[in-house]
Length: 315
Image (cartoon, rainbow, N blue to C red; front, side):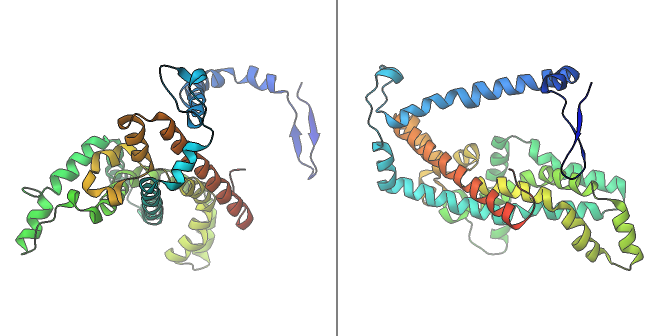
């Protein structure tokens, strides 16, 4: 039988053993099991390779026989100007993407919520979701076709107004705008689903009471919809802030070139060049570990700040 006891606030707490939960919900645990196994295999087991960060790793010698060099790779990180450039570019790109890209799906969700015609609402939502399912390679191909120097639509429009054509992919100052705008276009619709789900969980009686009290649409959004979304926004903001130093590696790899390294070279592409092209896995592992530690620190600080300011946090 279930054992029940009262909590400090008088609420009844269920003290059913964990084994009983598994027995009662075993189909759900079986469904989750493949995901857990794949996560362990592809995310946790490879972490053993981090030992290379403290070695002068030689594939022929393996992990156990490669010479141990301690923190020498990390000392090189702090003195390497190319890494510092990549680190600066990663921070700038991450902050700009956060400031511009994070509010975009929230605004779109608020707009969708105000659309009352159900057929039109479904159509516009579907159109906004579609770019998310397009391959990154195809997205970059579309952008290159639109912005091409010779027959690109955008450059033809610029030339028709008497302007000089722009080589968007060969000028460093255009990399960040192209990266951010294309990211918003591709992900804004799909990301808005989460916020629409949060809005749908708001008690409709609150809106009815607000209408009776004479509150207009803007006031209802400001005092009911946005506060109702706030816990979801806070959690996603914590993840977004911790991802500032993470970038879409595949997208950047398809967009950048040596001409634009001054703004486009980020930590992930730097690791790729050093580790694979430069055949230096030890240093690349040290850079990756350094990047992960900073991301974890930012996540912890952001979560602590959210916990102090509001009532929502990851832990």
